[in-house]
Length: 457
Image (cartoon, rainbow, N blue to C red; front, side, top):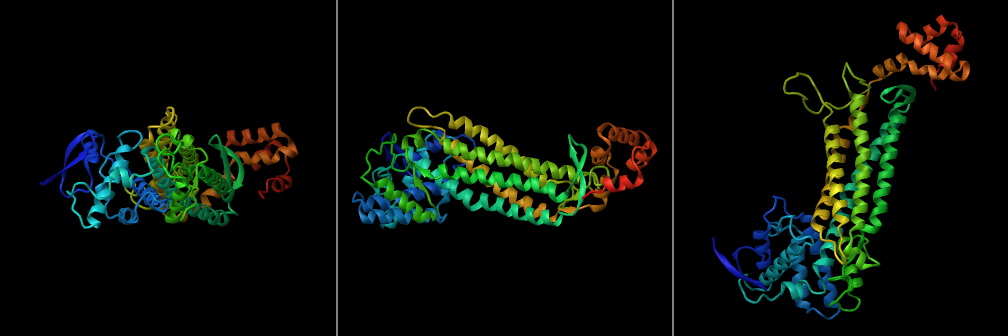
């Protein structure tokens, strides 16, 4: 293994000769050996997008030469194309502002620029300075939260929201398919009055609609970027108009509609917008847990449970019980929901830790929000494709439960009163006979009236 010597303000560091990073990245690799998970690549891409925009804005404003802008843009484009993912080795658990990751990106861009400019990695000094050129008009304190907001918005808009919309479309199809299937309702897990299977599923759809509305509402605050705030929010060391121009370039490169935050002090000292979005994702997880549990109950059996719907048989369910099939997609969905709810607790705890002009829990917050967004997108697509689309109504089982339910007696309340209807239900249950037989034995209802009043519409 060959090495080169890289320098920073603390001295010299040995770096493997083929690596594109410098001394600060190497120090972080040695000082933060915590866990195995690297900083999410989506955050790296978000930061690279912001640096590309910053270079263009700086050049337009006359504080960065055109050739240096071109090198930074070219290096960022290669990073965003996924050509250099292995050059970002730092773990999530580092300084809470993400300084080590910001410098990792700065150093990689500077070294890529050196190669693109015909130089060598061990040239001293590099043509692009990681701090003075690549990081010009920036601080980690504004560029890292900008990068993680870009990453989160892209994940949500490109993956999570489309997955929810696909699931909602499938629900609409199933609700229409099951609109005429009358079944018994259940409250407290006990028999209740009838409804249709379509109506039952419409409750799920309404949960998803409200959850999606909450996520879209949270996007407004999430897409306010603090770029240009630099160290503490007042934009020190930035040329006039830099923040607005950099934002225009970010929107150009992402195709999205980010806005400048109206108060950079808020956007850097707090991450309430990310906590709000996490809360919306948690709300969706709560809804999805209800959905998973409903299908597990309705599918239970197949002979000794409710058995009112049949889920797709995707794989064998037991290593010891032949023929057993489990509601595996429901179980995967509910596990993700637990993880998202746990992530929200960590995000909430981190977001409340802003002190004066900076919140230093950004890697934790960014990582957890991205994980929640990605997991929800993936598990919703999986549940949609491998479960909901293939759900079949067990009409015979549904009819059996409906006809055997004592709570149909509720339909007699307006005609004979609650207490007489209760007598019929209790008599039928005690003797193991039908409601009609009990009503006629007790002489409380005629056969003609019973048939008319008990018709389920």
